[in-house]
Image 1: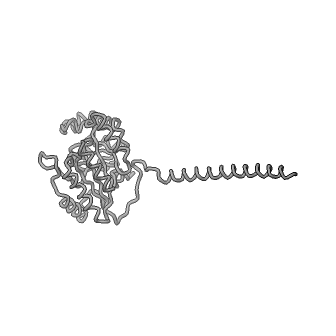
Image 2: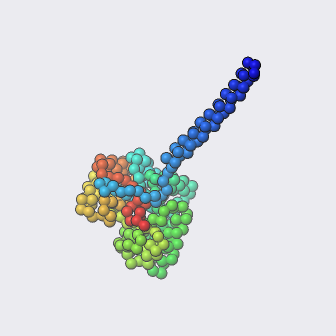
Image 3: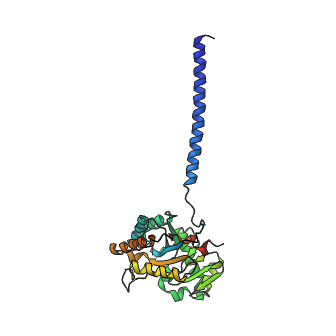
Length: 279
């Protein structure tokens, strides 16, 4: 074999080795990319978590969205503070493309935000006696099911409008413990969430009644007394509209900042509430 043939043959071998290495490197890169994708995959709503008995779990549940600018302000505060929260939403309030995008942003914001069901009509427009009457059970049930479909709510978690009742797997208590609508929803696998403590509204004014300091004091007292629906867990109710003005959005930020000072406190979405996770 002359020198030219040797060089040609060596070149062919070099090309083959380079191509083989390139394929190998490409396969490794693809596997690494797939591994990275797996590592950062978002959990699905309802995915269970493991509890730490040394922690205190705080579930911020805000009702009646979409209610801009209050909903927008609350989301912005929660994002800035890096904490989780649940929005119990009302389909009747989703009017126009802006409000639809706001609901979409909550639904797509999991695991930081969870979209949950607060009925389509807010209890036939706050007519609670009619909404919860035995004769209207089927209509009220349809109201929740329609809201779930309209807003594409990803979990079977409900808060009853204007009512503090709990239901999960046949364990029912609260104001409407004997109501046929509650029993129907429970039999269909829905979890009904009440609340342990409300950050209430001032009389006829869109503003929180208590200061952040007063609310934190009440939360600490609830934990110390063991006076919550589930041990080491507290569900706090408030409404998006209370935080429309900057001064009250600042109060919400202050409230969260104070809670974060206690390292025992962990913020979670309501799909991780103990009775919801219980099968």
